[in-house]
Every structure is written in C-alpha cells, then in structure tokens.
Image (tube, rainbow, N blue to C red; front, side, top):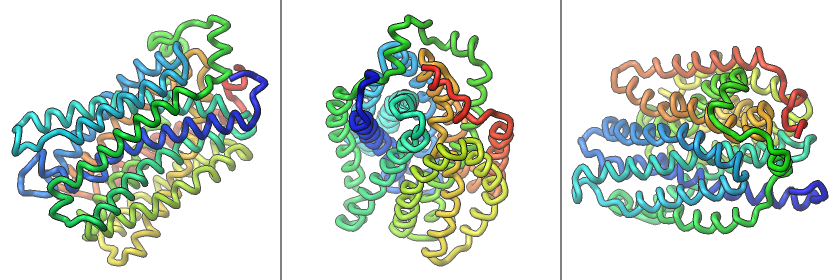
Amino acid sequence: MTTTATKRDRLRNILGGSAGNLVEWYDWYAYSAFTLYFAKHFFPSGDRTTELLSAALVFAVGFVMRPVGGWIMGIYADRKGRKAGLTLSVTLMCAGSLLIAVTPTRETIGLAAPALLIVARLMQGLSVGGEYGASATYLSEMAGKNNRGFFSSFQYVTLIAGQLTALCVLLVLQATMSEAALDAWGWRIPFFIGGVLAVGVFWLRRRLAETESFENAHKEGQAKSSLTALWREHPREFMTVLLLTAGGTLAFYAYSIYMQKFLANTSGFSRGTASWISAGTLFVFMCIQPLAGALSDRIGRKPLMVGFGIAGVLATYPIFATLETVGSPVAAFFIVLGALVIVTGYTSINAVVKAELFPAHVRALGVAFPYALANALFGGTAEAVALQFKKSGWEQGFYWYVSAMIGVSLMVYLRMKDTRTHSRILED
C-alpha cells in the first residue's frame, strides 16, 4: 500500500481482510459447535463424555499443525507478502471443511472415518496457524498509528463472529430440523457452507492491497525471515509472545469454546439452551472488542492485559463453580458474559501487541509461530483437559489449572513494556 493511499482505501482493505478472517474462523469453530451431534458417528461408545472427549482430542490434534502452519506460512507471508499468506490459508481451510462434509461415518468405512477427520483437522490447523500471523500482521500494519489498537481488534471481532456464525447456523438447524435428522446428516451442512464461503473469500483476498511495511522491507532487501533468524535475533520477544498467549488463549477457549459443552454436560441445560446462552454472550463479547481496542490507543496496551490477568486469576474458579449449580438461563448468561468481559483485556489487543514487538521482515513469523505453539499446548487442549478432569471425578481441577496459567501470563504482562509507546511498526 503506497503512502498516498487514502483512509478510505485503508478501511476497505481492513474490512476485506477481516471478512476473510471471519470465514476462516467459522470453518474452524463449526467443528466445535457441532461436536455434540457428530461425535457418536466417528467415536461410538454409548457414553456421551467419552465420545465428546474423543472428538475433543481430534480438535486438539488440529492444534498440533498450528505451529507448523505458523512456521511455514509465517515465513511465506514475510517473504511473499501478507496478501499471499492470507490467500493460501483460506485455500487450505476450504479443502479441510469440504473433506469433513463428505467423510462417511465409522459405521460405513470403519476406522478410515476418524482417520479422515483427523486429516481434515490437520489441514485446517495448518491453515489457521498461518492465518493468525498473516491477518494480525496485515491489520496492524494497515492501520494508522493512532488507531492501531482499534482496527487490529477487528481480528477478534471477526474471529468471534466466525464462532458466532457457526453457533447461529447450529441454532437455525436446531429450529428447522428434527433432532433425528440433525443427528443423522444435518451436522454436515455447516461444513458445506464453510467450503463455499471460503471459495468466495479466496477471490476477495486476491484483490487486497499489500501493506506499506512489507513493501518497504522488501525494497530495502532486509534479511529473510526464518525460524533460525527469529530465535537468534528476537529470543526475548519470542518468549514474550509464547507466555503472554498461554493464559490468554486458555482462558478464551475455556470461557467460550468449552463453555457451550460445560453448560450442557455439567450445568444440565439442554443443548439448545446452552447454544443460545453461548450465542448471546459471544455477540456482546464481539461488540466490545473495538471499544477495548480503542481504549488501548488512549491508555496503552499494558493496563488492559494486567486487568485481565488479575481478574482472571481471582474470578475463574468462582465463575465455573457457580455455573455448576446455576438453574436459571438468565443467570448463566450474565455469569458467562462476565467471564468474557474479563478475557476482553487479552483478546482485543493481543494481535497488535505481538505485531508491535517485531520488525517487518520477520513480523508474520514472530507473531504466528510462538502464538500457534502456545495455542497447541494450552488453547487446543483446553476441552480435552477439562473433560478429562470431569471424567476423573475432579472437575474443579480444571478451574485451578486455568487460574494458574492466567497467573503465569500476568507475570509477563507486569514485566513487559507497553508496546503502544515502544512499537516496532513505527520504525517501518
């Protein structure tokens, strides 16, 4: 993007990149939203918790590829451009979604069914691993210096919108189809939808403008991006991204992705009620992301992250413990919303904080790889760990685990500089 580009051009490209991000994350979260329906077709056991645990382990397997995707596609976005990285990631996501949509059940093809499901999730994991770094870098670089927190927050707006869209598709299907039909074949519909939407996003992303930061770095012939260069030149920043992400991503997956299952499997709400509570709280959560991002442009990034860390450590156990016995959907709604308001201190600004830590020639890789590694270790395993604690009879152990990891990230937030005033993007 040239220096003469107008604010309208910048906004158009930010919105275009965000729209593609929405579809990427819809495809990713459709798996989680419909697990309650398709788990028994791939992992039949007769016990719901065991079936959900098996499906959750496959969800976690997808995260194994996220560091690989962050590594390979982060380098690709640093060398070929942010636009090229975004286009490649949505192509892989499309292929993974369509594979899930057409894979026969275990009753039909035996063990090949869960095997193909794993292959599809590995492809989607590779895609999302690269998507985060490319989109976080693109939005942060495309935004002006005075509104970088605000515009970069749209990464999580679209991430949550993708999750919310998956839930809305679930609610529509629950309202228009019988439980028997949804259990039998209706769960395939969202994956077909995701594949078709991804094709449209492919063409949208091919029309995006490249960022000025990448073009300047490319013209100046800066050192090429590589994992060796990242670790040799920026080890402190690498570890900062890894550890600041650990508690934040675990809290996000615990409060949002796992919460739908927790409400149904522990609190005792019906699957439909649990879906409505999740959809309502996620909608409010999505709307407050830009408000928190704009606030960070005024007071800095650090106060928001520290606020999340303190509140997360103190409130996580009481939130889950109260939800165990809550009987009112309205009460459950506000308790879950409170948890999501807390995690907003991380979600709204984590993308820009990471992007502001690295120079342009290694930025996409620096954002993507340690973030994806933390997600593989803590975010992607959240459901499986929670269900394993439940299966062992000590569900409260998960609450302490989440609190402890938020505490680890809080230590990082307290020690790091505020990237709003120490931004490497300003050097571009």
